[in-house]
Image 1 (cartoon, rainbow, N blue to C red):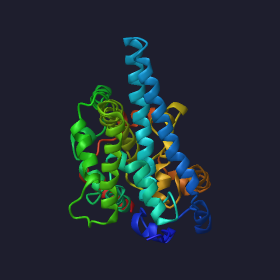
Image 2 (cartoon, one colour):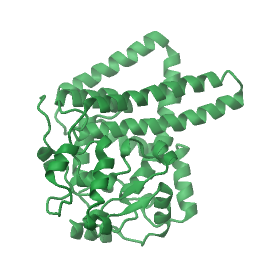
Image 3 (cartoon, rainbow, N blue to C red):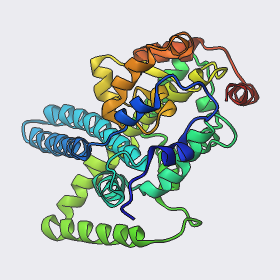
Image 4 (spheres, rainbow, N blue to C red):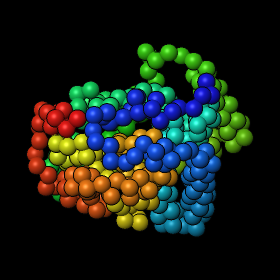
Length: 342
């Protein structure tokens, strides 16, 4: 159970494709794939400290006056939602076995530190996410299949994009978020195991202890400062990030199956923590942990084929512009181009 996941094992499960001209040497990838568990632990703990601080400050502002309380609460929802996103990215690291080379600690940190309090099971996420990596933007991609609606068709008008994100931010599409998270929460066909009992035990102990210590006050904080950001700002951020990763693209080359985005400093805080903006790089080499993705990207840029063909976008506002002006493609067009590219 504690055996490390090797690079070759990861590649067999979630590699974008095996028959492409790999621009970075295996020796360098092995070096960049070396895991530092403490980096991930610090990454998880940092997000929880920020979340706790945001809740405490926002709660104090309600005692100043109503206006300060409202402003503080809106800011807290945005900040907490963005940190929930960062925790989801850490869960994503654990799903790729990139938190720790020790399987037990990888699962424990990923589940206990991120997934379970996001109401997700990392093992179910892993199962679907590896399918996404193997066949992105195709009928076999579970992420793409979930989004076969008009909301995910591009190009769009400025007005259409504005109201799309406004609806997400205000929680008008919270049922979509519940459905999206639901498939990562429980899958009847998945074999039960020790982690299922651990999850149930964790929920029973955690929520019982919080209720015993703080009573109804805990549930008030939980709903207002955790569930609301989960169904509003996080929903908008996940849509924005997903669009930036797999939409309004050419799909005609393996380097254009997804994009890497260069965020501004404030975009990095709100939309792209933990180097998640290096998404093309991650799809090409999923064994590289988040803290080494910038180094990987620099090596990829030394390759002329990558420089010529990779879809690289400057800022997330640049992604919005591409969504407004991209060529209109049908689902069949995208599937055909994706098949040709891989």
